[in-house]
Length: 403
Image (cartoon, rainbow, N blue to C red; front, side, top):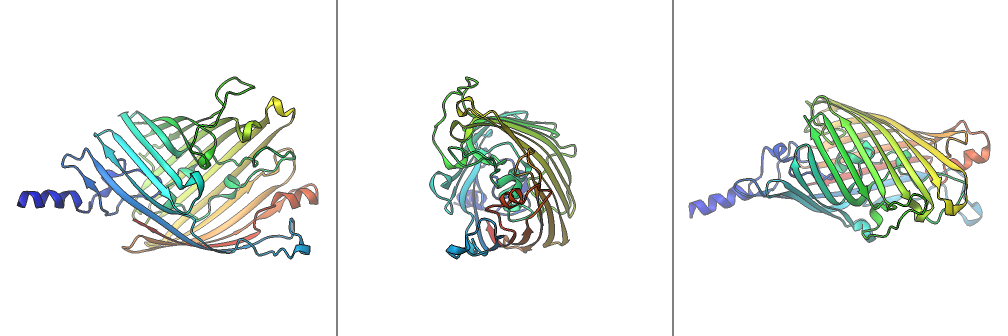
């Protein structure tokens, strides 16, 4: 009887050394490093099951410039203001048979196919070679590869998420530079914990579809899918997927990376979108610094009978510092050539923030203010069009709980 009770306690007890299971319980939502939590595991450790939860509740104030507003219809400068629940994620992750890891998460705050946020399993043949299949983050942009609950600011850089502007109307929405979550197959691995690679093929339709819907390319006669790759160099060992955590105040890590992708006949077979990016991240004790530059080339397919091609770029630099063990100050400068390199002018978007981590209860409070400015435009029309749909002044207050 005593042996049975002891076995149950061993299986259900919180794990004080959760960092050793970080690789086994990777989920991209909640970091487990330095935390205690409930984990069920077999006696030999071959099977691990870890439930997790992330809930975010936000308050938002957005002020828009007069461009694009029709005062005759009493359109207000203040819009998209109030409260939101950006994420309500419930999931579980773990390890099976000693070499297979898995993850499934549902975002109840989303709609349609996006409710299934992630669903994948990963088979590690050896540390330098593994295969991942399912729905997960595409290998592009440090801002997206960071654990969702540990971003420096509550809003991802606008240069990654806002749609570009072009003088033609596509069959679908204009593309943005980020690729986000998608369904596909990826090969990845790490060599000496310094060189890390990811090479994958995805649907190229993002998180809004969970079905196969692509055809063969009319132009190139290959499957019209998203082909993506990322290579990173971490000379001081594996870089934690965080932009600042009170559990990691004594780290010394650095990351340099390059990535690229080609989305063949994306946007309902209208364009071929090629992306490239470089990234840098530095974590030293209480200091975090990150920077990225990314580029997108949009070329129309032959069936569109449009000879022009368009090029866009974006970049940001950000830094955070823990002035207290539970308080982090943050700043970011975001640039976006939204009109394309053929048109003068770009958006510059400074932002400041403050993060407070409530001790011993996994609560995190984030406050952020962002201003969107415009500079260098040749005509007033170009200037007016550049920030359509984007708030000139925005404030965000986000309270987050993770388990």
